[in-house]
Every structure is written in C-alpha cells, then in structure tokens.
Length: 320
Image 1 (tube, rainbow, N blue to C red):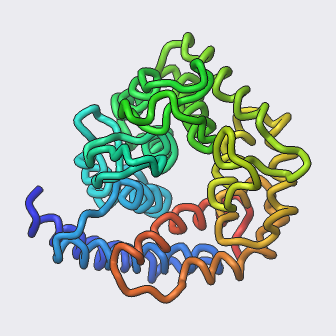
Image 2: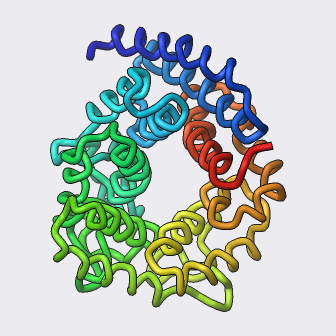
C-alpha cells in the first residue's frame, strides 16, 4: 500500500469508526477506550502524512480494539490486520522497525530484527483474539509460533533470547520476554496450531521464570543477574503471562504486584484477573491514557495499548 493510500485509509478509519464509538457510549471504561482509540487513529493519520513509522505493536492494539468493538470480519478491523501483516519482518515475525541495542552493550540489532516480546505479546494478544473471533487465519498464528519455536536460546535453553539476532543469543534471561514467549507457544498448542512437542520448551521457560520470583519483594527483577524490583510495566506483563501459565505462582505474583503498585496505569492488563481492583485503578489509568502529548508517536505510545485493554476490562469486570 502506497504512502498516500495508507494516509487515506487511516483518515477513513477515523471517520468510519468514530461514528460507531459516538453512537455506542457505554460506561466509563468503554468511553475511555473509545477516546484512546480515536486519538490513536488520528495520530496514525498524522504519522502517515509526515512519513513517520508506526510500529507493529501500535497497529496490533488498534486491530484488537476494532475486533472487539465492531467484529473481526468488519472491514475496518481487516484494514488494521492487513496493515499489521504488512509490517512482518523478513522472518515473518514482528519488530521495532528501527535499529536497537537491546542490552546497551554496543551490539546494535538492525531495523529488520524481530523481537520475542513484540511477536509473542504485543502482536500475540491480537492474533489470538482474532483467531478465536474468526478474523485471523491459522497461518498467521503458525508463523509466530513456528518463529518462537526456532528462536535462539539463553541459559542453556531455559529461556528465549530477547530477539532473533545473534547479538542477543546467550545473553541474560529477561523475565517478561521468557514468560511471554512461553505463553504464546502454549496458547498456540492449546489450539492445535503447533505440535505438542513444543510443551517441553514451554515448561522449561515457564519454570525458569517461576524459579526467579522473589517472594520477599513480591516481584521479579528485570533480568537474570540484576537486583531490585523491575518497573511496574514489565512486572505487569510478567505477572499476566505467568498467571495464565502457572496459577501456583501467578496468584501470589498478582497479589504481590498489587501490594507494590496498588494504583498504576500499568495495571490495566491485570484488572481482568482481579476485578475488585478496577475502581481503585481507574484514576491512574485515565491519567496515563490521557496525558498531554502532541507528537503522534508519543500519542500512540501513551494511548494505543489502552484501547483494547480497557474494552477487555469493561467486558470482564463490567462497565459503569
């Protein structure tokens, strides 16, 4: 799709789905979801017009919102999914579209590099929801599952590498990355999309993450060999994945997370696991999702991920 065509499609999406959100008000979670979506779509249109790159993680979030809001077969959702598929790397996975030094050690991965967390988590949630909803073909799920099954390893095979690039092979395990990789492979296996032999890898990655939970602090560090609690955003992702992979550690990790961070914008993805915490987190989430930024990429960074997460809260926990 050409540059001007992409901008035109994005502009159409603002008008078309804008009419849907305006006519289906809902409660406060839905209204905030609609707002973050509308502002994100406008930011995509601005980014396209100025030639700025819009990452797969942002496009995936907007596709997931649209799938929940208007259905996975709706053309507006399909437009986002088509755009997402167009962002696949040469290895049929997903990355950042920019050079990145993952470990800050001077080994910079090229822009074409695919990352475990991007494919398994940021895009993975959308692919799974879309597959279950009949809008994402099995081959798109198999692409990521197969890619994860082939990704380089670290810690003697106990965790997935941060990315597919040789620079990141054998580096310290990053807990949210390993948990996310195991989670997506397990989800694909449950749906019969990858061979059962992958379960040995799922268990190895899951168990290694579980073994590094710090019960005293109620959280994980960021990576093997580091100290202190990781930040709230990375911990929330680790907890969410582990809560589904292994409730025996997921439940105490969830409780520990809410003890450490009782109210945070990062908690949006965790509230469906403990709806009793929803009201106490609404103000913090709203403040995070509406913080004043003007650059289109910064708008997407602060809004896009909230759009589907808030609809999920409304669906699971109820709207007000």
